[in-house]
Image (cartoon, rainbow, N blue to C red; front, side, top):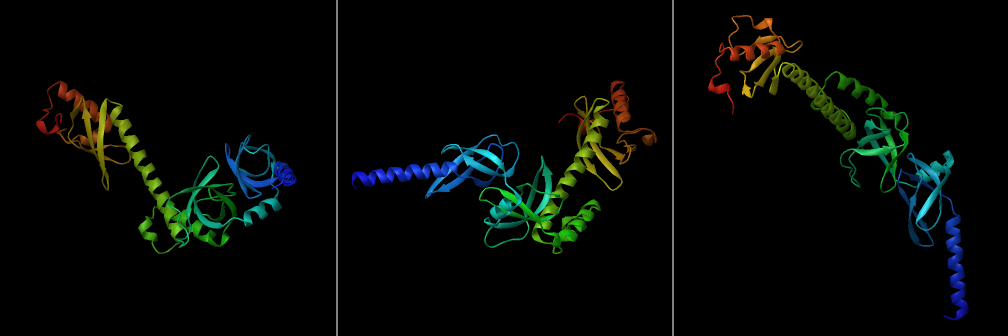
Length: 285
């Protein structure tokens, strides 16, 4: 290679570098995110600054390591970009901080998405909505709704508020719709359990007791407690106002005159005055 060839090569590289810096790219970007740009057979990872919300932007390189936002992609630019990405169908489950999470709609031999994945830019999202997303190799970006499945989303929403279990829905819906229901039903049960436990705990602790555990029965709860470090006999209470159904020790038939909070006080007073004998089965472990 002679000197002229070397100069031509240098000039060509300089031209390509300047051409790269003058280009405008269309790409989705997350806050504190980066984009990958290809030019002249080279791959550049550009850090994009001052991105305050996920969106599809018009981006211009500042140098070969960073880029800046020059505007938001318009509808045509967005659609052209989206068409280049593979489509993935997902079912919406829940949202947090404007980001929806969902599951794969149908099992596919070409790919398998495990668990909940975040989706960005979802519009008019709702539980069990089927949506078409585009995958850029790292993130899922909302493209459009699949309104053909909308009636099933409405059915599932009604089912979950009626307390139907996931087992009752097997075989009636697509894989993703069933998985979305299972996630939401489990969350519903967890919230319900936490609510019951919180109420029981507050009732016991208000008078100085300690809730150890409880078992839900058809008509009430069997509650296991400690007072001053010692176990009380199991107590059975009603579900609505925790009225005592069975105190676990003798109250001369006046069990239902007490609730969970007042019973703890009765127990404490009875033990202190030696009116209740604390036998080994309910003493410290």
